[in-house]
Image 1 (cartoon, rainbow, N blue to C red):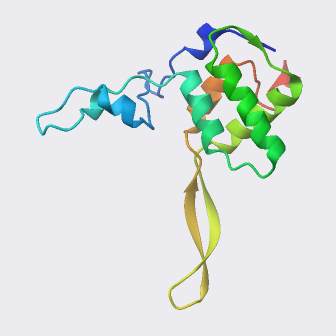
Image 2: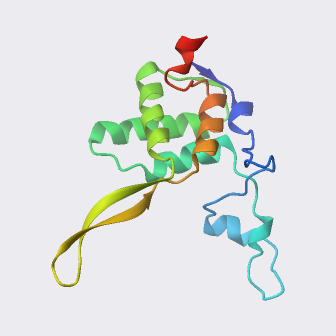
Length: 152
């Protein structure tokens, strides 16, 4: 699968059609912002999130369980951060799909232990990006929703 740099630089849009601001700004991103009336960085002036930002965030926060997954994460990150169009091998493409799917925001039940030592179930949030942003990024990278390719 060939991925073009201009696709990675494309900005993601919110449901209303406006560009979506960078959800996880680094200290360097914050340092570039003008100050608001309180002398703090004006977070309303954050740059818009791109497909490249989304992919890198998903790779960075994916909880890998093997050294091989760590290798794949590094390989994909080097390709995505490069300045040239690139071809992604099938095994990397398949792994990136797993990583991106894992980054969709969702609620999951988790068993926790209270201060009294008793276990209880609690709903916790998982994932980094809302599903519509992950879908935009994956669609631009050439992925289809499973089951949709058979309908065509």
